[in-house]
Image 1 (cartoon, rainbow, N blue to C red):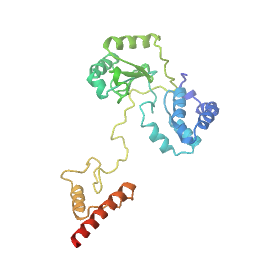
Image 2: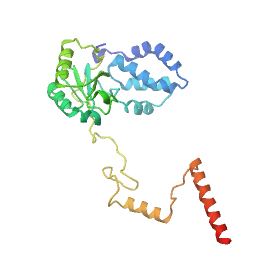
Image 3: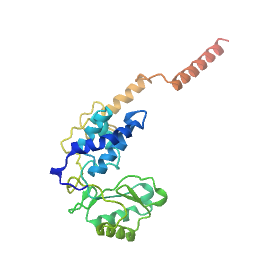
Image 4: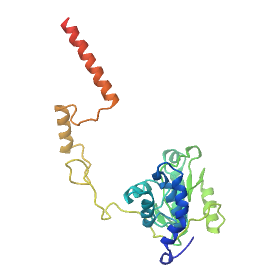
Amino acid sequence: MSVAAETFDFAALAAKLKPEANEIIARYPESRSALLPLMHRFQDEQGYVSGEAILQVAQWLGLTPAVVESTVSFYSLFFRRPVGKYMMQPCRGLSCIISGAYDAMAYFREKLGLAHLETSGDGLFSYEEVECLAACDRAPCMQVNLAFVYDLTREKIDALVEQIRAGTFEVPALAQTKAPAKSWHVSQGAGLKRTPGAQNVLNADDPGGVGDPSGERMLARLAEDPYPIQVRPTHERVLMDTLALDASKRQSNGSAS
């Protein structure tokens, strides 16, 4: 589907997907388990996970939008903003780096003229360097629209890009219901409220630690009381306390005799 943003009708899409959503939800003992497949279906139709999709899935599953958002944002499988028709995601995990991923990623950036988290002006390519894709035996690897491509070389990258531009690549293009921006990067200082770095540390850029008085206070508390925090009694904790008590009793009995 490729539709101009102003003509896209989300309500019609939700109505279209509702019967399928009901079937997906019915497969699981807990309806929340349907969250990921439902988000995939919306992304299949829209090309990304829109705010409307998050609200709709939250309503269908009886969850808060925050729960859905936090789940979706965890995965590189979901695109939170409009992206190109072909999402190029080379892996930058350790096995891929050892096997030449740095060279492959540098060549991709040169070939596409894109940096990390950028989309080409024609809306054809988006580029993102992602964490481990769990295909270490075929490193360096990547995903194109979530389909794996293994054993990357410059020659394979050339062929891949040429096939996509020619419209002959075997993986279908993503839907594009809204034109993507140049970048979907969110800077750290984008007006978002940030929490303090540590307890009694007001500066969000200060994580606490060496030279920070909060660390000194924690050490002082530990020196005064080895159990400064009330711990929920677990089986292991009860067992340890019982063994310690038995050892103490044996020591006391030995001293008495």
